[in-house]
Image (cartoon, rainbow, N blue to C red):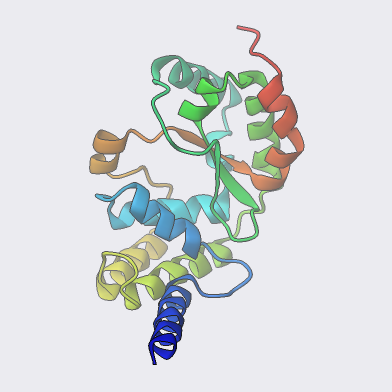
Length: 207
């Protein structure tokens, strides 16, 4: 009897996890759940930002490469290295898009020249897709519907509908996330990042 109870309990836990995570090949559900855990006070716009990054990549910040490079160096110089984050976090289930956390990057003394090279190559490697963005937003709506994230389905749907009507604009993190967590990262192509990872970690910065 005890054995049967344990099996049933285990099946219940697995079923609950599957409800939130799902089994689709290309989605952002794991990343959304991780984001909610990482930034407990986040808002819906922060989840929209995650979906936008996963579907559209980093091209919007690479239009002006001079400014992008200057901003990268300025941010690396100003941030601390107090972080328990991993160096890289993947946003899409197929690892096609990733974030490199700059505090860990700086702590490991990785090479900023190589990182900027990856940023440039990523901008042209990630195929921007509003259709894919809508699918990723639907992932978030599904998680809300299943009570896997701390937002009501209706408010999430209304926010995303408004973003669509506005042409899916680029959006910053919410004020509370910027104030409480001070996120510092760069969005990259997962494939390009993996190609340059060894060079990134072992080549010392020339500065």
